[in-house]
Image 1 (cartoon, rainbow, N blue to C red):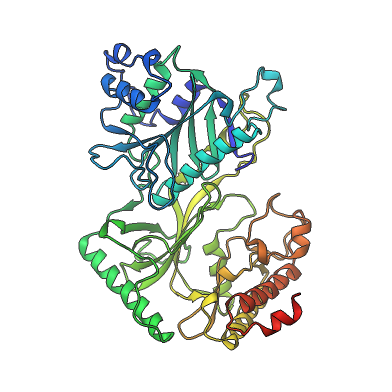
Image 2 (image 1 turned 180 degrees about the vertical axis):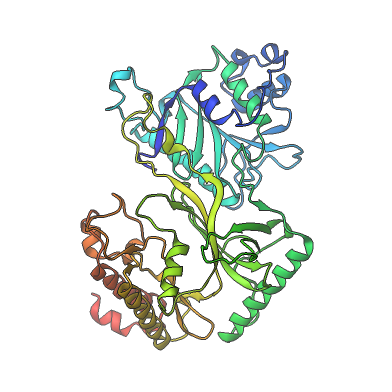
Length: 511
């Protein structure tokens, strides 16, 4: 997340921008007793977590929330433990971190471990580096980034908040897929009101205002039962095809609570009057997801189409919103209209209404330091009718070569209709149930006839498959030869990594 933090934002501006809902709203007054009971100067530096939690509880600042001291017990999945984890009431669980239920995380560091550095004057803001580069600061920054990454991975969110204590000072942070906005630090022991106000306002925010994705809902029991049945059937069919015993689905759902219903509003201009534009899909945990809190944050699901009763692939992502970046669904539709083979069929695709990042909106403010590299993203869902298994699960080297040949044919046919893929990797080639190729993930594709300059000053992709020329010069224009070289890397990697071999050949060529 280098250069993706925007700050230091004035605390009052932070409240107005993010904690003042865009609806008729009167900011609630703090409880009259809060100042007498939230005695900041008496909160101990040693044993800080418990004394702070007690002070908040006494003052009744956030009555609908529970603050839990989680300094001692890591969570089971990510092995992380923020100092204080905030949950909705009721919460009667153990004092451990549960990222699936986390509303807010609070971390405490010393002042010397502050990940950020406020400028001393307005004149120095343009040249000032807001992200402190000491080892202790970078470690602290990495720690709070990891907590946010775990929360995004465990929940369906558009954004989230956190609090960072730095001895007698504190900062508030708002995170989304574009980056994070960080407030100017202030002395909360001298003036505890902004801290109390944050907690009080956060307590009164709705789920959407706290960052939850409200386009997702809980499916009905019968919908969950049908989805589980379809997932089980597909997992067992794949096992039989490979001569293996029955197995659980790759989604590894454990309880009914893991299932969610996704809403997709199809933006296909070819939809006829009277045809359904709003579609619903039920899925459990993702088969794959990005580990970064910023960027596209892609999650992929095998999902049940409630309209057809069939399993589909649902891709939930935050697409880059730029003039020359096409929606992936539009690219698929163009390829299909031109008869390109070995690509999946689109069921529906479209943006999630009202869900876009906001961090980029503040990079031109006079308080913003330096030139943050923050890019706008918009929430987007794509549903494909065709499923496949990973390329790494090929049954023979003959099948591997056949599938790669078909992927190259799909790439060639797309190139002839002015589309260049630009992201060839092992993860973007699937094998269908009948042993053919599906070339997927066209979200970074561009028109071949575009002007000869990169669309952006950054590169994404799977590094072991990117062409040597681009690795050596990331500003290089992506060309056909770069994709063809990536196909070669995919073939070599999968042949060596996943083929059964005695090892004689490798021992003969590797000293």
